[in-house]
Amino acid sequence: MFKKYLSKQSGFTLLEVLATLVISSILIGITYGVLTTTVTFNENTTSHINLRQEANIIITQLRQKHQDDEGINSEDLLSLIPDDTQLTQFELRNGGVTWSLSDNGTSINCDLCETDPNETLYIAFTIEDKVHSYDFEVNTAIEKIASYEPPEADPEDPDPPENDFFDYISDPNRNVFVYGSQFSFSGNQVNGPNATMVIQGNLSGSQLNGGAFNNVSNIYIGGIVDIDGGSAGLGSRTQPGNIYVNNNLSLWRGSRNIYGDVYVNGNFRLKDANIFGNVYVNGDVELGWTPTLSPNSTIYYTGTLTHPDDYRQSILDKVIRVSDVPSFEMPDFPIPSLREDEWYVTKGYDQTVRPSGMKVFGGNISIQSYTSSSGQFISSFTNAIVVSTGDINISGGSLQMTGVLFAPNGKVTFNGQSFEGLVIARDGFHVTSGGSTVTFRNITDYISTPEDFPLQ
Image 1 (spheres, rainbow, N blue to C red):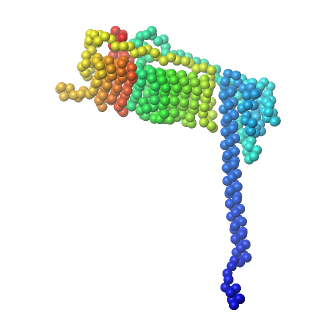
Image 2 (tube, one colour):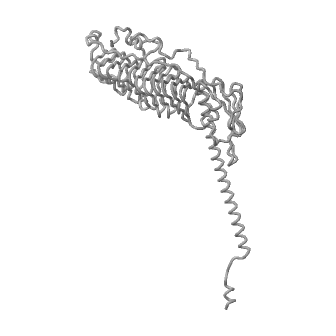
């Protein structure tokens, strides 16, 4: 019975056991190899990132120190190298003088231990991670502090007349066609080559339609400019002039085009915009990832520079710290007050809306497309002069108008197809229709002398 029981038992043969052990050993070996390789790769990647960040910190601090008015001395250099940073080599060249770090890394070997900020600073060093046997090499140059030379043209407003508003806006060197505290535009195009806009308040992205482009040569903005999104540009591509911002300027999201030189009396934030002229910043500069500077464009600034790690050197080379930048002044002419009511009567003003040559004076004025008594649809108004003691509202889907709109105590709102002329309004010019086109014409096309100017 016992033998018969044994004959029915099953089990593993020695060969099967050995095969299982061999396969298990192979799988364990493969798994261990993969894990070891992964851990080593991760450690190397982490080491590379850490070393690169340390290098960027050193370069950024050296740049800020070198481009101030005093340069770098030996104590500055030692203080800029973190205590736990392992440098296997360090060389600095400036003005024909070479510096190097001593073997123990505690002193500087140099003939003249002070850099000249008026000379380019060349830097080469290697940071080592001894734990992971990994190193990171740096070889770069820091531009000298710029000896700024002002542009030939004076950025300040040329020879402003003495308290004569009419002469100011009619001067062919200025060609002012918008003057007021605000400008909002939801239309298609603003055409003002060789013309000037004066916006005394703030300008935000919400005030500009995403596809609108302000084709205006010279723009004064008295407040903060914060454009974040859309693609509305500033300046004239065909006749670039100057853009003056008397506060902070932020051009963040949106690949807009900025034509002409830009003067900023405040801080400047730049991310997606395309810059086609120089920028002069009397303050700090902050760079985002994706700006574009044309080959002839440079950003000059007086404050500090901030940007993401591993930033493009080709952009940083065109951002230069200087001791000062050109100043400018905002046009400070107050909009003149209205004349006496009798003056408008003697000059032929009334409250009748006409297709051509109307001269309207009154309170809040509304002009719309209409059907005449003869059944003709009227949507075109030419050579109009409209003066309001309050607001002016122009509306009509196909409405077209040429002329001058004065609202020294209110605002002008336009909702039509096109307007050609100029607008003087204390509370700004607001174009609310999506397809509108606004085009500049000098005031002398409608009012030739100061005697006929409807404001005092």
